[in-house]
Length: 552
Image (cartoon, rainbow, N blue to C red; front, side, top):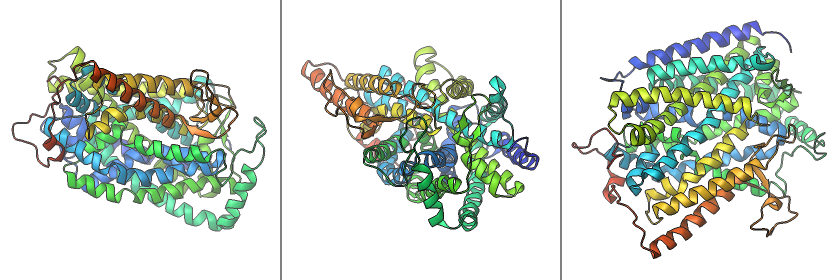
């Protein structure tokens, strides 16, 4: 495939521009008295009902990670990529009750971010600062994944330059995304998410019915997948994967699914979507309905095997000279469908990347504004100044996401999300567990965060990309690489485990031990600004102000 696919480019551009216009016009949708307020710009006025919240959370959680990264992982590695299906099924019932508690306490106190809650719960600006920084850093690679998915689509259409200009489509996407996010805040992705989901469902349902019929049925597709994955890799000499889990990756599959489920609603953008809901009932209905997206996710994942059966070859990235596995699904659509339908599919993937990227940048901007700028730089900032800071911060976060793609360039784009998952899991004791108990000492939580994050980053650094030799090449760690002060209990074992799971265990152990030590020496634990009733509140007291109690 060479040259620009004109029909696909025209259809993609028209739909892309259409939703961009919607993004700008969203500032007039459910218009607030004053959009220059963080509650309005960053949380949509906290007024979204069941349908809008469902589309918003769906657009928030089902992203280019779903449409591009997971099929690419199945295409390259096989059954391991299916971890994404059970983890979403596990996540919704697992997090429903904690999210209800977070929504209630945030409504009572006007919290905008998870770090706001930590500040009030533990009376610790330092701990809140660490949670805010963690959220911002973990969000950047997740936004980068969205932009990588969009770049893969444009590369498939034919926009695949060399050198620096090979990333030009990504920079264009950055400008469009930055502009309408700056203008309309959370209302933009909430409105666009409706269009994105409709397009995605149409494309996937057509693909999952039409393609197996064209390629000889699912039996032929699975046979082709196993034949291709069982071939030795030219780099390692070992089979690339299998359509069934092996003895070496079963533990990785289980820990990856569980770790990802625990991390899913710790991400700032997930919390933003939840806090924008108008009631606890809205959250309950959405947690019950969102598993419907897991069905869609399973269908999308299977496209990785369909691409093998169709003989798809990834496009060589003009910037790096290496095959871009993110292009697997776009190339599949380009080869198997008429140009007009491929153009619609490309637009669906592109829009599906921009919606979550917008929400993520808004969530990261909220963290900067409330927990860094207002707490440490300008304590008396007015609501208008907060909103302006959030808008500027959302631009900076997107620049950071672009740098992740250009500088790190992992083997699979899913690695961007998994690296972010390792980082965000370190906030679980301070955020999720704190919704139920204040047993951990605030300084012990700081110690656990430092230990878990440092070890997690050290382990991730040691994982190299087998094709490029670069560090941070994945999140799967062989057990024989784990040692404790020279003791290697699993020496020689090739069984793999998810780094985030290992780092979280260390975090919890350190936090528990340090808590016992600090209690023994009588270190002050700070004041809890929340009450038991706050976690079950359904209405906001009249005297509660919209600003978070970040300085109490």
